[in-house]
Image 1 (spheres, helix red, strand yellow):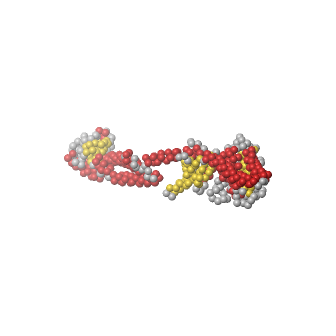
Image 2 (cartoon, helix red, strand yellow):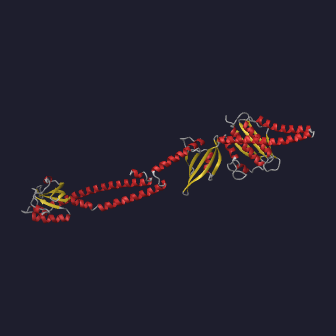
Image 3 (cartoon, helix red, strand yellow):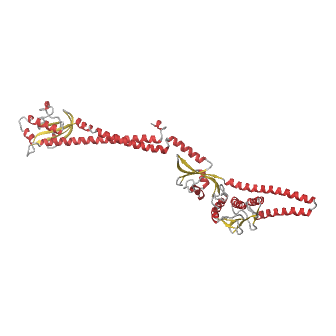
Length: 520
């Protein structure tokens, strides 16, 4: 069976095992019932022959016949009538010396009785199984006592053959067999229903197939470079692979408590595609999809990819790109100014040409000196210079407030770039398309144990309802596919235990303020 069971499904193996176990149990119970029935039949036979023998021994007719010169003609008809009436196989009345007066076989009358009678002669009762003239039988021997005395004047033996007892027992076999068959059918039906349910749950797979599938999927889950979080329909975490635990900071042998940012994605009843999430000091890109099988919703799967280094590199690349674009624009403007200055020199207007060249140079140098002097974080300074050039190209006046000051590196540069870059981008987009003048003011200051970032624009502003939702992931006043930047700002602020707010600007527009406590 072992070779065959290798190709059997678990449901089929369970069904076969259940049928085998139930068959053995029913067989054992049937055997026990037969043995008990045989004992009961033997006990009933003993009780019956003893009762008949004692009744005959007390009969006055028997006592009177034993006093006759030839008791056989008197006792034989009585004994046979009693035998037929009681259903016993023999009724033998004999003298104390074992001489038979009656017997179903006429030829044996007058012959000695074969069996034990000593205990009966002593006034007791003999009960035994003995092979006599009629074969094996269960018999009893009792004494016939002279009335009023203890004198034994005869003996009575009544018996039932073992063959008859067995025939009576076999008559019960159909009922026992019927009950056994019914029990087997009922057990087989129950086992079949259970195996059918198990087959649906295991999809008819065998143990070897399920083992291979488990090993394969377990290896895949732990080998992929993405974090995987499997959640059931009730939002309970069923599985987190190794990469997922590493990215989320969940202990390998501890409970799967997800960070609030990720737990929020799971509870949302919408698909999520490549949505950035800040978890600790990591920037993760999360995607969530619902899992279904045969029309049934099983839960959802959340995939996580680590974009921390990529985000940092992207921020630095954006800064470099901004500087490059600014240099390209300045080079273009410088070429125009240079042509203008040369033309003015050729026209003999040297002093005016000198004032024009030095004025533009002083303005650009003043901005660079201000930013670099106030912000000692190189990446942040480069970011703001790049944003200033972008603003200039868009016709926006971007001003770095004089109170701006960053000494050293109070916070990781990556987080500062995330907050400042997204707030400035949001302000530049807010004033885009507005009538001049379009202004954006930026304040970045480290003081009193915190970093204050404040960006003010003269755009259309936000209503109180919009301001309350502006930092929520996915919300944007510019349509679908936006609403990521301010969400990242919110996550950075919450990670440091800081605050964020949008308030109306005094002259119209909005003021975006973020306060980030500096860790001790």
